[in-house]
Length: 145
Image (tube, rainbow, N blue to C red):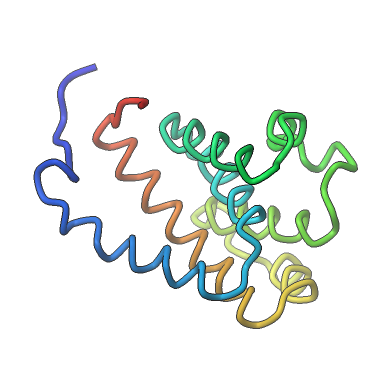
């Protein structure tokens, strides 16, 4: 791969808005273990090797099992995920693929049924955050650490 800009190395201030967004998401009461599933699933869809690597390690440090991480891209085919997790994963997929699918009322309402309003905002903003991080890492060919 060709050399591309290191955004953080060139101008760390560029990351400040996304870091602030991450802090906001953490303040919503959203379960951080669930947030790592959101980050992993969006990163799988987007093909972001850097974020998949980072968030799988982070999720495992928080007690997530390897089996659930290995099967995350097939979450509909297994009973390893709770109804709440399944609703959030469906919303994550719809938001990440928004150009092709938009977010249906069914997907939105199912997620809203399982979340407080503050958690729902956390999910929505969290999906926005990870999709932004994915786009930065993919565009700049951020190497694995």
